[in-house]
Image (cartoon, rainbow, N blue to C red; front, side, top):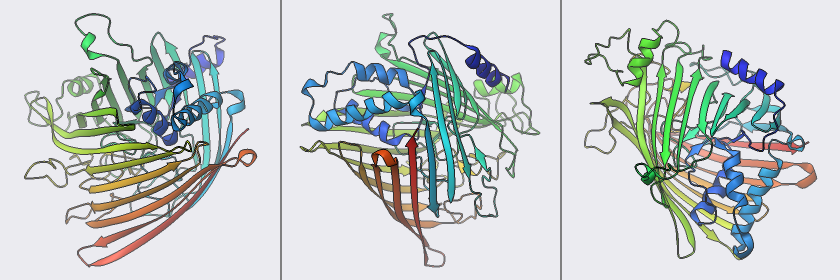
Length: 501
């Protein structure tokens, strides 16, 4: 991409040394996000918006620097220290990192985690911050997955997480492969999560979520706009090769406890499809259905469109920080507004222990069948489209939205015990139904046919000092086939290692 080349050249030639940083924390940095959300719920961290990732490092830094930690409880002070430690080492010359991982039966349900995608991988990370310019190179060599009947990602060298960025005013321009997750759930998103590999994209993100100064719009409170445009490098699809992806998100906080988000994402164009300014105009104005007043035909239909809203309410009840959240995403639009909604919602609780440890609890419900809340849910609708009629809402074989894939109904629970040092034991459990239909969908890697799901994981994350940081998990999923009344059990294990150099 020309813009990506221009940004890279500008970064290498720049001698600017402004104090602002254009770097990001991406959507897979789950431990950092959990600490940030905990301190926001506890009314310690005055970070206004937290449901859109990646998040500008500089705004997190400003919020942390403004905290007076003299009267904090031990668990809160420990969480703040963990965030400070990440800020001190991220994107600095002494913050480069080498990594390696091995895995047996990598999980199909990634949940915004940086866990292995394949049986083995090794790589490195190099970050440099040059004031208003930032470069971040993350490169790994991964073992190819087993051959499958449907297209799956088989790329050997992966630059996932690499990007360059630049500040202009209060905006950050970026180009690269940043993992994104848009929505209030720490684990997932119905429309855009880190389940699939990050796609090559150009991004524009508002850096500081300053509130409007005028009286007319002051009620909006802190706000942020995020956009990306990318994709293209997905030639393995069986329907339309290499479609483009567009994302727009607006978040704002009209009350201290309430954060609201509006999201629109789209899958457009692709090899052999009409793709010009007229196509973009039709997408902007929502002319994405055949037979509309805009006289849209199969040939001129821009593509697949999703849009919706989400909310996050946080508070501190009798010393227990918590937040409630929900997301509703329409798979289609009617009369200019989304409908055929999919959704998810949940609650996060945190209990401070006297030792300085923290006990986190999360319960979440997700339903990815269109119109799930009505008396007549619509099957074979979520993440499907008549143009992108095979791979659907997927990038390099994996759903861009929920890890549970379409037509699923899953309730999950997570319990995490976090020591002051950051060493963490986590237990996860899930129960529900996947692919609640009778048709066969070979592109659904979670469940090509109807399956009941019961599963659990346990994970240990710890820092061994001189020997580096480790993360290891063990899990088991049982899939019940109602057609044959048979159960299939799939166990898995992974070990990850990283070391700062």
